[in-house]
Image (cartoon, rainbow, N blue to C red; front, side, top):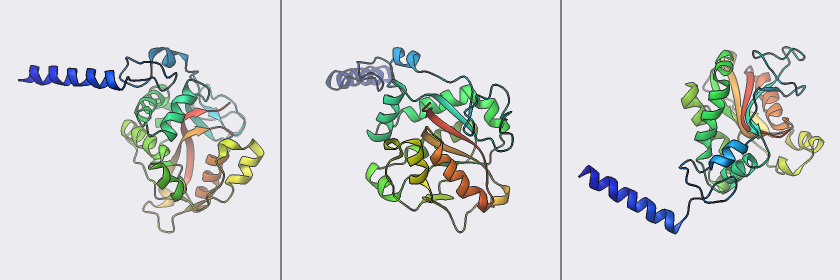
Length: 240
């Protein structure tokens, strides 16, 4: 009976693949892989070897401290450079309701940086929130889905009620670095009654893409006056 079920499932999958050929999220070509990204695109992704300090753009080749910025450092752990094919993969994930990259990239980030991330001794992962209207239109917050996958691997709880967005602004991707800093200013608030005591909470922020760092820096500026300690950022991609 089990063999019959297995054969039936294989036939059904083959029939669906015939009707709706599985396409790679990176290049759009037919893809035999079951992770939605072909082997060629996986190899072509410009993966980072080290985390970055968002304050000075220096690679952190050892440990979790920036030798230039010291305690003011803001460390980003990103899987790869925000160029094709990773850029196309993230766009599909962000706007096309294709959520499988969250698990794949979470595993890749943790494989690359797990030891360093554990040294941050974070209590919570906090995804960068969308404005409620934008999240309703999209149907999900891509940073939250990614954070949940990371949380399962790192065994760190995800908390998406501490930080929320109160202003809807232009998408950061359409602006230059100076405009991004002005556009994002004042968009976040901290919950009046957080479930977690702020003075006992070390936070890693999570977002899909970090470019200039304006958004995560504004989130940090909002959280730390309330007593939280932001110890780093995890992202799928970083735009150099």
